[in-house]
Picture 1: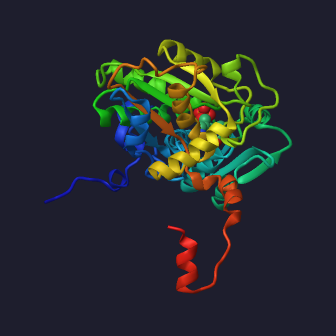
Picture 2: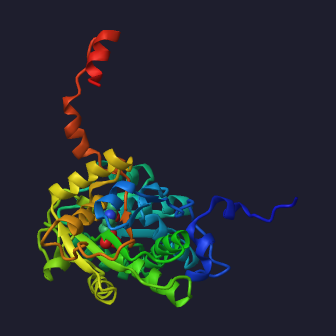
Length: 366
Ligand code: F0G
């Protein structure tokens, strides 16, 4: 039988899948690496933890081509940039945006400059930007400083900005909400996710609302965002001049989409909360060792947040009286291999033993 599937459809990608919801024209050149279509994994143990017959699913965005959710937005932003004749991209980043921008620029055959807080980018992410051939400029400043500089450089017309202040990024990222609704058959009752620059919470909320408007779903989820305790400007409702957290991806003191995030939280009757670095790292280990899902620290903020909603008296949102049978989705945003440093510290205890069956058997300790 003759197949009508084109090459680009076979390689997938969020534009091919959700074209009607995205700002692309039939003539837009599509720059894709097959992003999206990420697993929504049912977690029996997290479901048990919540209780009352609730079902918890983990949306694992670490399986995207460059290992984070940024690729969904980047395919749209870079395709539109190429349509407009751009020859160079620019972004500020805590790491993942730079890795994604660098990859899609390489794919499109254009240049990419990435402005990064020096010494604060996880090893794997910096390595990615380097491998994909980006111009890397570390600055003596934090992400907020980098974004301010990028905003100014964007005004010169020499570069297309591909941070989430570019609406094409948000448009692409809302496809994660579409996928969740398509798979579950409706929106979940709760959606939990980490918050940094606040683009992703903005994008999910836009996606859920758009699907409701198109009658693809019957409800909207209460959206609960989690910031790191040392970098929680939205939670405290004030700019944090010197944000600090081991979850370097969300080390942001003045999020660009602050207002939109607030709107998402208020309109959805959700909440913004914060989790400590210890809670984040404990949740990262827990998820790897109990569900086989290895995520970077920032991603584990949604899981740490779920635990907080279940266990803590001072959670911004308590699951104590959660409606029975509620479906909860936690987005985990980036792959664990991007940020190996914390785990490497714990691996120091590994010592070789003699190459004999007896010694190896003893060392297994099982
Ligand atoms: N999780 C990860 C792994 C991230 O890299 C980011 C943001 C977030 C969560 C927060 O998402 O900013 O949309 O609220 N990383 C950006 C970057 C800032 O430069 O890679 P957000």
